[in-house]
Length: 236
Image 1 (cartoon, rainbow, N blue to C red):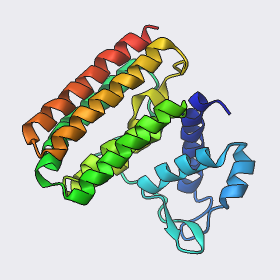
Image 2 (image 1 turned 120 degrees about the horizontal axis):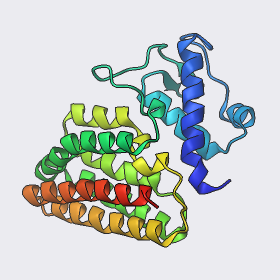
Image 3 (image 1 turned 60 degrees about the vertical axis):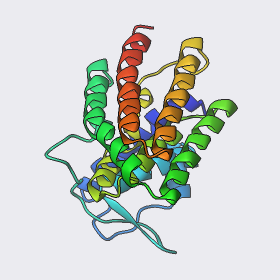
Image 4 (image 1 turned 120 degrees about the vertical axis):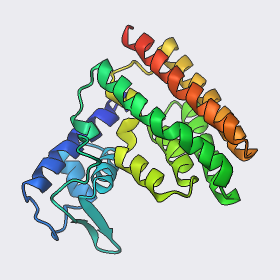
């Protein structure tokens, strides 16, 4: 399966399962089909299934029970002041810009707080996420998951549960390139991914030094830069 199609497949699968759960199929308290059955039903890989499941879990619809599997927790998706699920948002560039603006409003301050409050273990987690991104880039595999994990680790390092919950709600689909069909082998796209790695490194280094204002400015530059790059990439 082509890597560039996985995020779209996961989003489609998540949306379909979400509709079924809201409709009571299966009802609250009932077990979801196994990962193997879901792979066969939707004709997708385990990676796609796990991505879709992560979105449902973040929406508060399902929960894991150790040794038993996944169960429907609620038929009412969690929301933040009526925000729509990102899987239901249009792929238009305006939706991407809106998402990045929302992220900027939260994540710029999250970087500042992480630099102020992060424990050594939390800093190491951010470093690990950065390495995972770099490895994925070098290996030519999808980078969206590692990208989101990096930002989630920063939110966690604020030690403010609201930041953590907010990023979990947004989920991996908040990484805008998962919504657009960019050609992964193109020079422009590869250059974009390399730029992201460098920007992540600047954010990480500032957090490691506990340089809060530098971390804030590095995150601001990163997200503003993403806005500009997406406008350019969308024009081909």
